[in-house]
Image (cartoon, rainbow over all chains, first blue to last red):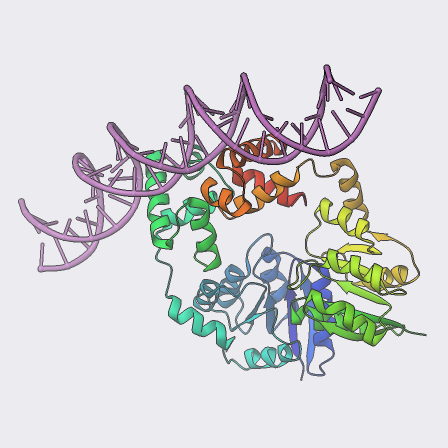
Length: 202
Length: 202
DNA sequence: GGCCGGGCATGACACCTGTCACCGGCAGGT
DNA sequence: ACCTGCCGGTGACAGGTGTCATGCCCGGCC
């Protein structure tokens, strides 16, 4: 009996290449490929996929969110996050959302098929180095307000712009930025935003 | 007769997946895989690769630089840039460096093999949409000083930090930032840096 | 020589940022 | 009712930032 797979990645070339790689295995069968996060659930239902490989950065909906929806709406389908970025916060959030596994794109190609089989069998698959890093890092110390303000600051927005986009007073925005800078141990808003992103706090 | 390929990409999974994809073609053979830019030339010489597929973002040396070295040091070996980022400036610089082709990672998987064959035959392979964008965009209007200052600004550095790292007076740094902001049509240093990066000007 | 033009620097000005002390509301717990 | 914490907001201050006019130096060029 073969395991039915769905691949979700916004880069068609990577999607196709992964399909070729996994199709080499006798017990795996790629039944669907999608390039957007918001198409995954429908296709998974339509094709009866048993394991979905999800990239995190996709248009429509990110892989973590999709993993959550699959866990809720598509019983019998497990998800495996396959991502470029081994940010600790991503791993934590992915597992909380109900993902069955989490591997980064620089794991050896030979291990992917095995990870898929493990996830299909209901086991948790997690990159060990990343897991360790995630545990010592702890969860994000940022409040929701700080997070949303930092997201805007990433692109270099001014306080006025941020305050308009987040519906907070300029003074509050400055306070949030100040406390975020403090919590990240940095000294400018952009450094803070980049540090937070690197740790998966955004 | 088969075409001998070398794959260079820092993500092992992508590398392996591309190898699987290309190995499906009867006339293509993957003879080497490397994860760093600075290993490509030696491996290409050792294995007699005829076409090298190069990612741009790699440790050691970036794909554009590698394409230049291959063109100079490995006669009979052509290069095909395969990258995530379709920045116009990348395309321009890659072609100037002597790359035989340039495709982005969201082209359909089926077209990659054909691109490889074209490059092997000595033809130029270029993403058409990207080529058009590159022509209208023109080359980077930034001076060397502005470029180096902007690179530091990307991470949110202050003027004092930048001036120390670039060996320019603080006043000059501010002038360069100001003119870069003007040239990019933005209003803060970070916006300018991001805009420049998006257009491949850095 | 005289005359650019570009790279680097300075100084002054208005405005923006980061920090801090402080305040009003509004939940949860006692 | 009381206190405590937390979220949102205000105001003031020192220092950083973006802009502009101006100047110097040096290499090219008629």
